[in-house]
Image 1 (cartoon, helix red, strand yellow):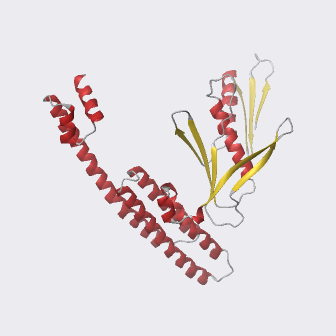
Image 2: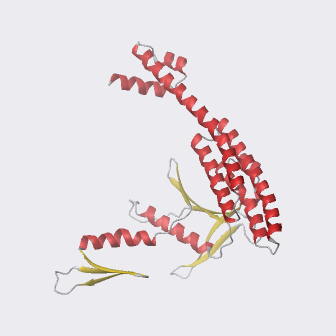
Image 3: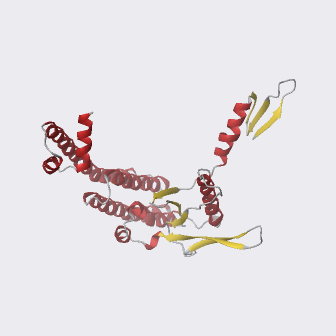
Length: 311
């Protein structure tokens, strides 16, 4: 808590009391420091952070998207989404230069990762405006469990591939919370973990295939493997010590990633060599068409090289 007061016998300084459980402090701050507290510190503490915000630049205008990921059916989701959307709209409005302020809410989606029959196709709340009229605030949901790995690939939703492992998490949690004996739980959980390894292997190989087909770049491929590793580590650490399985997953993902790195380095080497050839050819007076033909570089790249040489 921050309390602002005036200190006696001073030229209107402001005194700040900062209190927290087991930690109390007081000190005199000047007006500039107080302004920073009000303008930067306090707003940052109150700021709401959503899971993902994406901006797509179009010719006419930018389109903003907001995505939340959920494992449970949170009854406050409608209020949370409205709050996130409102916060983002306010942020965007601050950069608006028109005479009338427009609160441009992002297009929103909640992705529910685990099967739950209570999840509806959309979530909404009713807003009663000052003139007593009603407005429905509504946004769609995605039931992730209804999508197979093949569905995600066909719909080019590659970034969602790693979440396939959540199909195993719920089964493991159900076994862990059951009244079965420790030995029975361990046996059943190991069966689920073996399924998990197969899912990880399948998603990893599919991602490697997408990289080879240039559907995703190396950075995307790396992120998919990293998310797979992080989620699987979370499941292993939460439901028992399974270092052998963790190591197996790590080795599996590494075996997929290392060849991709080697291939990327080869491409970089070829590109570097092509640039060197282009520079020498341009110095010798070769025209752009000829240089493009022998190096396989884009004409724009060759023009840039030529401009650099002419500086």
